[in-house]
Length: 137
Image (cartoon, rainbow, N blue to C red; front, top):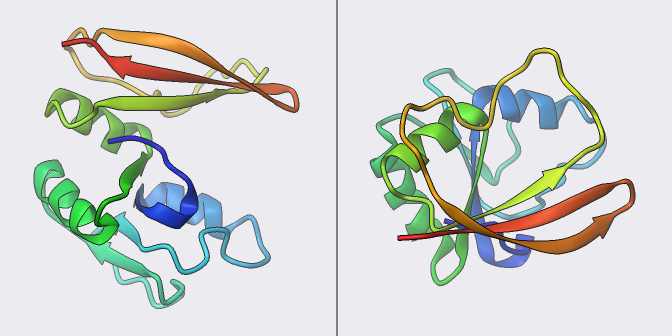
């Protein structure tokens, strides 16, 4: 699974990540792009392009791939990313690195396995930078 442009992918968010995005205010940043939220709660405040889904990570990714068609799937939230990594569902990742040190928070990976990636610097985004990480088999 990889990050792609908003025009050709489906998003998969945890309900916590959804709450963070909703807290930004203003227009829904993903527009009409399908967004699946991994949650068991009702989401009456969600935009029309957002749907709640339950199930294991493999089923969630199958559903997201159907929504994305020929595009890619973007997974957000440390818990979902950890599950997808451990289920060998991640081919590449694009990490955005911000110049902030956190003393706590949700890590991007909390699993037990070692995952090897090759990395390539993609460029700067203001004070941030992006790195593309491709899984090494």
